[in-house]
Length: 188
Length: 128
Image (cartoon, rainbow over all chains, first blue to last red; front, side, top):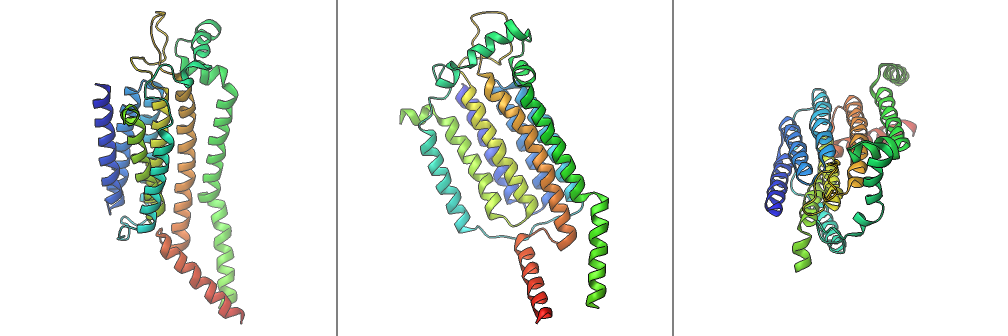
């Protein structure tokens, strides 16, 4: 049963991805990418990752799509026609093959005796109840056990915000424009 | 063959991953590259979340019943952080695309390379 649901969702994802990449008009492509994130969120839900599912739905399908649409309002609406590139296709196939070989060394999907489930994970599940007192284990690990890491994450987001402001904010642009115009004056 | 069937989820995710990877390296349009990167990234998340799944397990929210089997919460925490960092880098990527569009009036990478070559040739001509 799990296999059927997962395989159907992943087949949907593959279909959406292929049709997004074949699209010439960028608007349709961005919308399909939002749909991809939403179906991915459903898959996360099926795989028991409820917190990841709603973050993906809000951030992946929401904020990413809004950012892409904001960009689309400033760039050409269609991409230049391309034929299938042989070398990148070969590279992607080879990488996929190598990854498949590597992945076949992993424990079986869903196996309860896999090393990942028997090292520190049980301690976090027990500790979440006894030490932190939060029933949602993901919340207690994110905000308490790994609080500093989450602080570092907000630093990354803050840095990205500064970078975006520096790249497209008003003041740096005015400087480059004056620099260009003086250069043109010299050339003229 | 039995191991192949037991690990089907990982193989399906790798197919998605390679679709995104192909878009990143083969397509010249930068917005399309970003979307490809997005697909690639989401597929990597799926690989990690698949590893945390336990058969017949439930979401890692404590029920108080000691016989409940929970899926592993640690990959979930890792991927939550990765999603947020991913959208931050995506924002920087789109900002760079807007800046490139302003400077070169195109977002196709082969056209940008041509323009840069022309610029170089022109400045060399002016120097000599």
